[in-house]
Image (cartoon, rainbow, N blue to C red; front, top):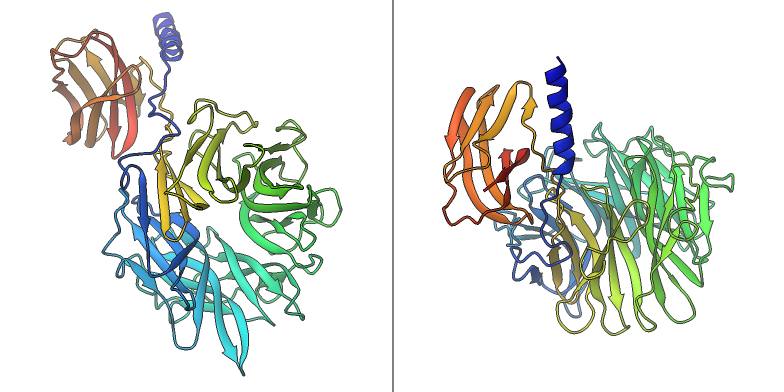
Length: 521
């Protein structure tokens, strides 16, 4: 018993001593994506990207409007393979949906667990020569064809008085779909924050709000930009109002404003920040803190900012200066925080448009959740890239399972960049033991042909990769080989040319890290 305890303590100490991280150079273009880490495509006119989503197989879906010169815009949905190539299996690469006299504009996209694609936006049509807009949902099958099981033709609309549009979307665990947008009341010139909820079949969920819709009449000319779940199925909405103040509102699971959110007693946070304050996006951490990204204008230019609140709308004054970090990239440099996310390392990723008024570029920074800039990211904590002269408008970003960052936007074309961002891997010297599965290496220090000792509870496909002490891949030793249940000894071929030093064997199963073993040559 004492020996077992001493061994466990020793293994634990060694695990801490040799903990490390395998990482690529964070904050650099991923040159395995497209050409040099970038791609650019045109789909029939001037591009304006609205949103993007990541499929479980790594494919990237982007929605945009394409506006041919002198013509009206068309809604386009495009799918890329994980390497940045266009996916020719997806309904002619770009699928434009124009039906009869109506036309559609996209605002947000989400992928259902079954792989179906849901797009929220607006449908425009004319009634008695009067233009009207209705909130809209389109659902596609995974191959890009319309899903005829969704409201009979794949397209669901929610007509209210005057006009509505959908700019954000959330999928509930029960299959219901929450759409956030901007709704008009009796006067079509007065907009307000709005929510709608649809059942999984595309019908309006009449139990939500008032007959399926929520309008926030206390917001005068408000524009909703983003929604996220917080505290389970409560919803945080962010945007801006006519007075150029930024807004945050918290709704409960049935669409009612929660009065206790913020300090005004009405469930609405409205803040004046310089001449103009815009909230573009938000993200919610695992502990239900709310991070917001936006920009504010002073007398001369816009500056990006990020802020932090708890789930009750109370500012976290320990974050930045009184709960806010305001960016200043130079006296003549404008900046806009257009998206914000939390990566797999629980770090904050902020995407910007940055530059003088004639030449905006894509930019990124990484922060701890406490607001500390990660200076090892990019150059002194800052990454930027462009696609040539003129404006490159950053719009949105995705965090892949491998933690790489996909930045999406437009100039005249649709443009995408992928940025390296390491995924933390703990490297330790102890044997991996879970459910009677044991993996180790002998001898260690190793010779040219060390043996990987496997004791597997069940038949398993394994891959083995060799990394140096800097986390750089040296070689792939085994690729997705099936091993039988029980005990197996697998010889590994390490070249005589392998320099002496410390290395790490990373053993993975079905793409997921199973074990990392420190070896000495």
